[in-house]
Image (cartoon, rainbow, N blue to C red; front, side, top):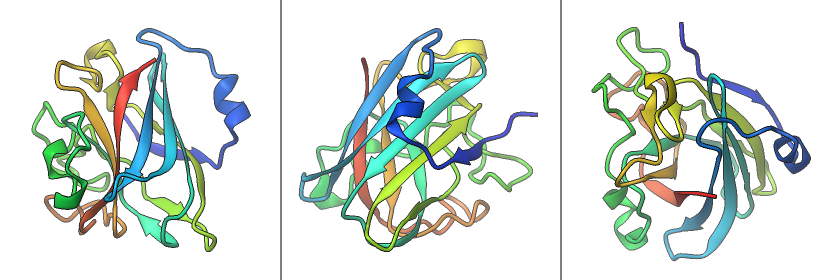
Length: 176
């Protein structure tokens, strides 16, 4: 059974020491709705999925939903990053890590922002691959993908996005 899990809080050194496999590495510069950079994400292909490292500052404290969206654009911040479309979901599965019929390939555990507005976290997903390895959803396909952070936490069951609310931060995922 495939599982997506939060591995641990991370340091940049941990990710830098991670070997790249298959399609290699990708990254995203996270921006707010006004286009200001708030952080970075690094994605590394592993033999069984993708390791994501998120580092950001200036976000409001508390839990936030984070998802991989199906189109690699963040050019419409004023409109709420809706051009990044829905979650990465080529198998058309319902949303939610706790949904017995899901999850979709863009689902990830919640991101927790510290009281000072900073984030340093790692996630691992077995539902996606940078290049589509082992039949997993391809992040770096023809129209790319974006990492999107929402205003609220994801309840991992409610359709279509787990009550995550508006999209406030976005990063286009690009191959390195």
